[in-house]
Length: 207
Image (cartoon, rainbow, N blue to C red; front, side, top):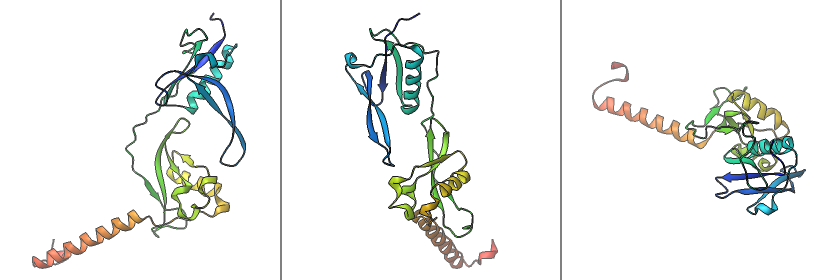
């Protein structure tokens, strides 16, 4: 049995050398509610000391969910470790995502060209999924900082959930400029094809 005390170390994209958890900082979230966030120090002597395995493993796993791209591990205060790697699992996320945005027409707006734009996303909770951000909805521009992004593996369900959560702000689908540009280009190409056929002495139905 490994004797305490233990400490939690983090290393990864943000930290090129180990940093150690030492305390929580009190903050306000997007809804101005009291919240906390962990603070890390490069000084090992400042690390918070844990004296129970269950507690240090629970906090380690919480940090792994919060910081999925970092390496989070437990070691003794003397620097021996990593410890307890067979207890709890480091989340693995496929960060390579080549999907393109989806344009979803909500119920009641079929064939109008008015849509919500869903972006591809990858999260520890949902894996590969779709998200609808309030900042991507023009009618919510003044409220977007107060509205949480909605995630779902089903894009239709993602839109439905967003409409329910944001109902008091009356989110409205819209016509994205890129779709306007695409349709304009398609129309231009069609007209040019007709002109070319006429120059060649062909009518549209001849081929």
